[in-house]
Picture: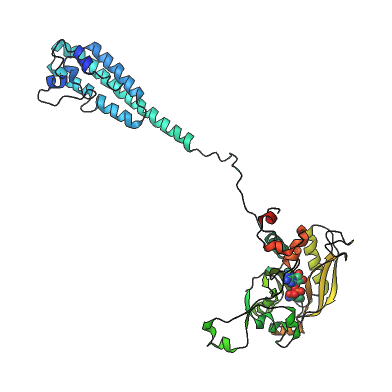
Length: 400
Ligand code: FA5
């Protein structure tokens, strides 16, 4: 296709027997550089009407063959650009006879119009097909099903934490967060457990060294040592001091105990702490609140019971049990044949704690409770060892 515009061979045919070795360019414009084979061709000097028809047919074939806008532009320049075949042929007819001018002029003009129209049409088609191929190549089918990728999911403990928070919110509780590094004042003293009190031994504690920077300060001088909180009760007095009753608070977070691990004990675990302070709340409200919580979490009818217990910061203190979710209270390995699962400790907030919180115990009262989040998670999913929950073992986690 490339050399189809009057090439040397063809121009020699239409040169009326003139020296075919001499380029048409040098004939029409003596002294000028000869045109490239495929470039401007000065055959117009000897061109006939029949040659114009061939030239047009040839040009149309080349235009149709241009596969990209760039190729089309090259072809356009070669055909109708300033030094293109047709303009040169048109310019050359000035040297022709009057009869030739009369016949060739309109034929060449018509040829140029035809070629220009063909170029325009081809350009349009090409740009359309560029867009069409863009649509094909770059279209995104949002409905196409994707290959399955390995997605993670929420950890079972976190799942239960969110569920518990939602249930408490629905009962009108406010969710607060507390610090995991705390001082012994908030973790013990203000909760009615002075340093000398043997009850401190109930919570094996990770004590922290004060940073060097604290050494000179009054904080260091105070006996108030730093620790990893042993329970979420460390927030009780802070919240009482910060807010005005009535209070309905729930606080779920990580706690730490310096103890050996077994199937039901970890050194790092979460507690669900909650308390209410107002003028009339009773232990009956506590039982009703926790009963609602457990029946919602476990999705079944349950029996709950309170047993007498001891915590320095509640009076009276109770232990909260619920009927075993596995054997429905009949007795099984999980509940050690008792029919009951131990869930947590609770009681009515001790008057000394209310006082420490700046509240008058003759006016205000309320309940408090603390439960292990992992224990509830274990009961909910039938997990037999608490240590799985922190194991990060995919064989375990992928079951949820
Ligand atoms: C307390 O920590 C009290 N602060 C709870 C409380 C709050 C009582 C408010 C009264 C009023 P206790 O040490 O029993 O109590 O812990 C509460 C619950 O945490 C336990 O019932 C158990 O579910 C869970 N728990 C305790 N120790 C561990 C442990 N090592 N690993 C996992 N869970 C534990």
